Length: 91
Image (cartoon, rainbow, N blue to C red):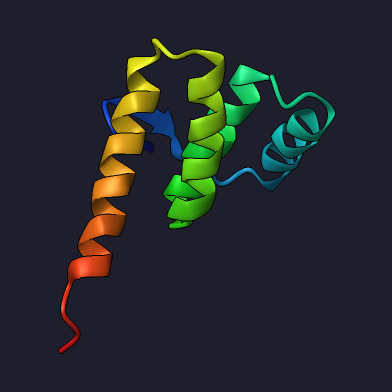
């Protein structure tokens, strides 16, 4: 099954693979400039409903490649989502 995150479709198996998540986490710890790992962690965190962590990884990815339109799109959408949560009035 494919899952849409932003403008890209990802395999659900990729997003739910715990060993792959740990691999990317290890890669980022060893090399914070690993763009692929930063992007992957951003996508995985976003899929699992962890926007703050996703933003952190997307932000690192943006510093590595300021021209990446996918990263800019995801940051814009997640920041808008968080802004909505902040300004939403409790019932």
